[in-house]
Image (cartoon, rainbow, N blue to C red; front, side, top):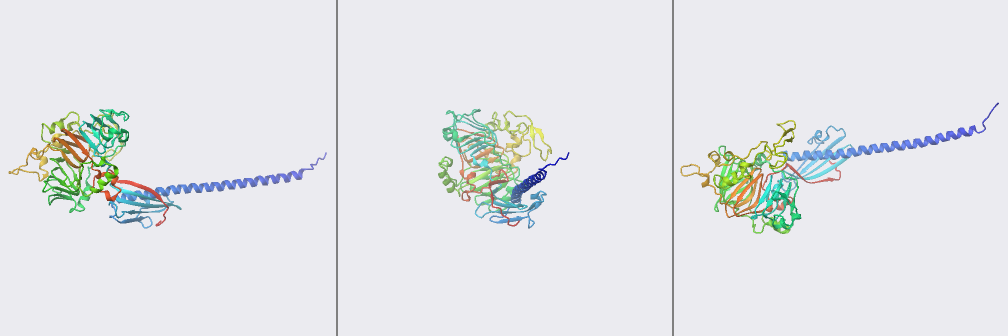
Amino acid sequence: MHITSLNRPHEQGSSLLTVMIVGGVIFVVTASILTLSSNSLLNSHGRVDWNKAYFSSENAMVWAAQTILDNPPAAGTTAYYSVANGNLPSGELANGDSDFKGAWVQIVQPPGLPADEYVITSSAKVNNKVRTLQAAITAYPVSQVFDYEYFLNNWGWWWGNSITGNGGQRSNWDFDFRDDPTVNGYIYAANTIDDNEVPINIDDPSIPIQGLAGTDPLLYLHSSVPRVPMPNLLNFSNYVTTALSNTSSNGIWVGSTQVIFGVQSNPTKNGIYLVGTTAKPIQIKGTVVVPGDVVIQGPVTGQGTLYVGGNLYIAGNLPYVNGPDFSTPPETMAPAARDAWVASNQSKDLVAYAVNGAIFGGDVTDPGDWNFYEYQYPGSGLEHVGDESQLGADGIAGTADDGIPFLHPADATHPVPWMSAWYDADGNGLVNANYNFNTDINMNSARINNIQGYPTDSSNNPLPYNQVATSDIGQFDGIFYTDHAAAIRTAASSSVFYGSVISRNEQIVYNSQCEFIYDSRVNSRYHNNPNNIINLGLPYGKPIAVNALVELTPDSTGL
């Protein structure tokens, strides 16, 4: 039987048309996918290049910051570096990236700004992507510990209703109050603010603080704040360089006689004795460095910072000759009035003492008074403090981790991380013990022999220190800084500190009342206004501070 399909030609044509349509659709979809994939890949590469350009520009900015620390441009000048002209090393920026096309960076020290203020502008190109950044920085910025009238890199203790503070207080651990001292300013504690070692409830109206802080604790009391690192004065090289840069303006005078030209350089006596009188005051100007001990008393004038490599012995009252009027403490004024006070006192005396050793006030050789209250006093006397071997990871004695080893990061001495309960509280690389009276404090013959100008009797024998110093003192004008102990016996009827006391351990023992009045002229809130800066050359806390960072419109100039 012969069978024939009458519809076969039509079916073949229909199938071919279907195949062509489906194939066309597949082609269009595939092409679209490939185009989309290609665009997505290009966009992805573009985003990677965009990010790379940012980080390369950021690297150039970091390189410029280090250049400022190593070899800063002169005041009021501009320095330009680029990969194209060969003075910006591309290897440090590109890290072997073959897509990196170049970078440039400009450092400007703007006229009219302080010499340590710089503007860095950097630009980098990766393939066809360019990113440009600009930062305002401060080189070797003044540490923020100087924003407070009283700063403890330890426990803060204010026990007594006859203590008054007019300014901010801060501690790098607890700050403990008892018996209603008066605080007209902010209180900051890295851990807790306490009432006789019990954390304060700021909603409790019976907190043991009078003054502004007691009136509005919600505004003035701040616990669990970050620690502020103390400047380390182990190395004076930067300060020595500054002091020697102009020895006619950096120095110490007694009356009209200049006794130190930038740095005390006597090879046999690295310390100095300074006594001022009304007729011949001590004048401290600019940055001055004394590698050894300093014994000082009497009227002081000038503006500057005296760096002391040994101990600072305050042998008598230390008043300014031409100091500001503190009768109304500036930190208790309205902000506008305080700022006006700062502006109107720019030329008045302002002296800082930055001490690598300790600050001792009064007659340290008095066994019945100074030695008892400052050295032997139970718990807080210097023979009980200073040990770094058992501090634990928090660096504070008397806390739960005392004696418990913690992991130290690797360093030059220990190339791998290591366990120990030692905490280097002063950053000098040594495990310090409690203070030893004979070796660390006493004004004995060995110490006296290293002090230039120490007074002698008619036979040229050094006078006993109790004929040089007195504990019957009560006025301390200046900024007093040490990353060790401030042990000051103030036996006058009242004691006043016009400025700041900043230390690791504090043992100020006074008679009837003690008052701190902060000198607002050194606060960092004025550092961005060149009209309100007194450049004392105070210790810096870190090498660089970034004040502002912005991204600018991409600038290909020089690429």
